[in-house]
Image 1 (cartoon, rainbow, N blue to C red):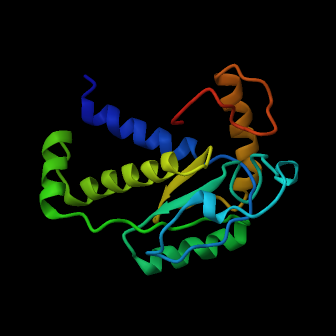
Image 2: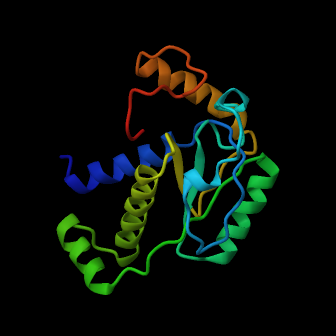
Length: 183
């Protein structure tokens, strides 16, 4: 029997995996705790200069955002892996969630663990940042994420599969297509 909790977990896993795909704009790395705004970080270029392929430094997305509560050793490990893979990401600041807010979220969403509730709230905060920015797409990762060094080659195949699944044609501006809000 499928429970709402297992469906939510499955959607989160699909979101995390599916977002490991696609596009190039050179965005500077932000330090932990600094505010993030996609429209302020984009370089001043003409649209035709951007590389929106799934194998670029942001895997075909306008930005890669890392969810972190400030665990420095995790971020340093991700930065090392990103250098090897040629990937760029940003670490937007996360709010300091009040305990009563976390308790209310746990009760409303049937989440038992404190860390899981904070993680869900963090994902929602990053989704809110993406919606409020001028970014058309973003990949959200957690700070304990790991990937193959060949991810930039692999995401090209993932993008083609997503387009086939959603019946979309090749689109240089949206390597994963545009027929979805959350992938």
